Image (cartoon, rainbow, N blue to C red; front, side, top):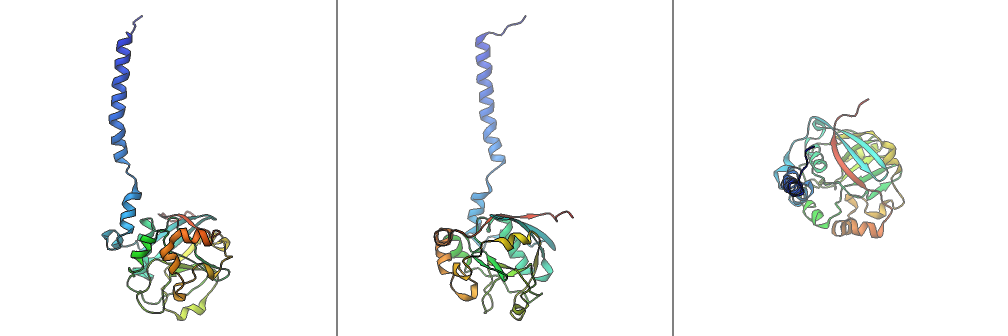
Amino acid sequence: MTTTSPRRTVAALVLAAALLASVAPACTRQRPSARPRTASVLLDPSNAEWQRPSPPVWYARFETSKGDFVVRCVRADAPHGSDRFYNLIRLGYYDDVRFHRVVPHYIVQWGLHGDPAVNAVWVHAPFVDDPKYGSNLRGTLAFARDTVPGTASTQVYVNLRDNTRNDRDPFAVFGRVVRGMEVLDSLYAGYGEQSGSGVRQHRQGKIITGGNAYLDRGFPRLDRVIRAEIVDEPAG
């Protein structure tokens, strides 16, 4: 029987440890965290990452505190809005955002960021208005905006019922919830218009400057987006 001396065993263990130590940093570099890079991009709306065009038809999943829902978007219906929404999702803007406006049997709205520093740059970064398109039927999605042109930026809404009375306004509908509409129906609605309301009501200043800290302190029961991501077309 061949035996190994204690000295050789120790040397082998030291060599193995050294090899592991040299490999570990390399593995870490191959899987860098996306969040630091994303954080810097979020503070720079002029970054080229925000100019990437969305696919002709694409899907996104929103994981929320009440469950998941999936939206289908069509670029031809509102190219500028589709591109902006696609990149906001792709680059993590909506992660941890609160559903600040939930009005039963009417509308769900979100898109003000949890970090006031991010809000400070995006309130000055509207995109080019798309022509009015589509109808505000239950489950449809569009960007919220003020009554004047050039005021759509990051906030979107989903209709909880047929709101065709809003079709007289210049909204460009380009998306629809294809799965999980019951999740949106179940979002906490006890605050109604008091927790931020819409763009046109001009009562969102405290959210813009206070972010999630303000909302969590004053409206702690609001539901939130945990994570949003671009996904393949759902099966079935």
